[in-house]
Image (cartoon, rainbow over all chains, first blue to last red):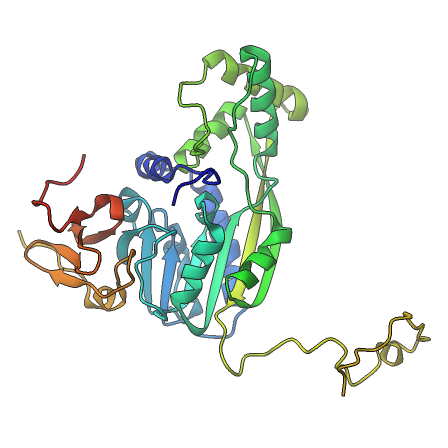
Length: 303
Length: 67
């Protein structure tokens, strides 16, 4: 699907990931976030015999799994076949926007830092939900809006200054405030979205850019500049980054906001939110306070 | 060399990403065939490549892997 709303060039996403599979060593952030994601799995008292790792990179999540979540079989897929080659489970190359799994196949779908490169996030979520059995769990981490904000600002300022114009360089990311709605629209039940901010300290802004490349996180926006960026621009961006954000020790921080999504495939017998106005006890009574009327009549449909 | 085989557990859950219809496994050609979409998805080193970009049109002659 390509139209004027298509933000990402999926072929470029795939190429960047193919290349990153051979660069290695930039995956500390991925491992850190995967660990946070699996902490959330630990909180669920259920067993998930058949699970999918959607966008598995080179299998970092699987290596941290250690039999958690009662997972007996883990299917690992990634858009880039070169990434999947580093994985060790049941492997395949697949596109998050066109999943090749039958409906109701999995007990659990995990996804760690891959869904932020998807053009049609609601569509990808719908496909993930369909691949789940009823009452199956969806657990995902993706980059949020604040990610790489220092880099975004520095690159834009440098490009304006050196080249007299600017092009999009850091991808638009999911807003945690929209994520819950997205899950509901995709047909999930009991959705929860929350975000964590990780700050990584780098010796140098150029080191950060190299790490992003090693993670396959290079610019894949369709409207990106297709020509090489002048070295002068990159050096100026690094200089601005240091000036604006650098600490006394000369190191620079890089912000990564990670949005965690937790939701369930709907099933009969699942807990349901109660209808507004259906409470049996007064909150004021529970709190021992005085009740002040809101002036709004109680739900006429009540009782 | 023995050609790597595809795990039956994986075959059981795979469908065509375009039509969501079942696939036929051609062990000799190492392809997963979607009759509905007229596409053959290659299996390389035991890894199914379920990408439309990489699939062979069924009316066409077999072509060597891209790149």
